[in-house]
Amino acid sequence: MLIGFAGLGRMGHPMATHLVRAGHSVLAYDPVPGLTPQGATAVASAQDLTAASLSISMLPDGPSTFTVVSEVLRAARPGHLHIVMGTIGPEAVRALGELPHLQLIDAPVSGSVSMAETASITTMVGASADQFERARPVLAAMTAAQFHAGPVGAGSAAKLAVNAVLAGLNQAVAEGLLIAEAADLDLSVFYDILSGSAAGAPYVGYKRQTYLTPESTAVAAPVSLIRKDLGLALDLAHRHGLDLPGSEAALSVLDKAVDAGLAEADMARVLTALRDRAEKPNHTTAAELEQTGARP
Image (cartoon, rainbow, N blue to C red; front, top):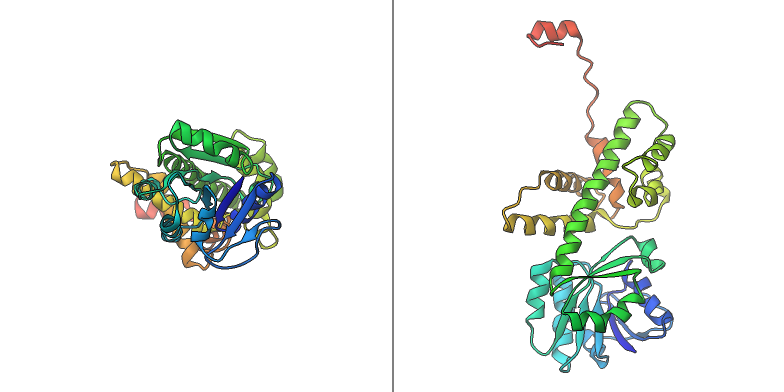
């Protein structure tokens, strides 16, 4: 099958590569020209992707996705299906879906770069039943599981909910490591304990080296990306009148990480931001508490 693919970054490049390996012919485009997946054909414009009857975008944000999809729109023939796999939020996806002459669905993914390289990421799809069945064989070449979340936009809503949990877990692991560090525990031993505990989610296992030796571990998901996704999740929550104090706290720490120059570092580097914010322990004595009228 001839497939157009836009967005050849950390996640998109291995995903397009899997399409080639599955026997598809891939027209590859990126707004910033770079390395084309082996076996794919590089094209100069997003409009060139419409030589295929199905195209995919895996771009980092709403503006770049809007630009590419608008270009696809100009050349799209009736029946062309475009799959938005970047995370831009359900409202943006639905707005794109209203553009004429183009069928559009959303299928954002959950997983790291290493999981994209092994096609073990998960996708959450917002589409009609017919569109889901049309797209599923293509998605299956790049992902280990495909969930039909509901109509267009539902995949993006599910992704934001997942990443709200992920951002909270990311911060929770960092805070646990800070407590262990303050108590002079061996962090490697503590991480073994954490992984084997009730809190030992898969994320905890595969992020071990990123937390313990970040300088020598490749970036899987940068702070800027999870901060963008969590911001979108909170925008959605606020529109529905939801109060999410845990997500608000995680966003605040991600902002601190960005301010500390860690925007392109792995999201696990919130541990660095939290260390930088740490104050010296307050060793107030019982006598001092008595003098201030407080109980020890």
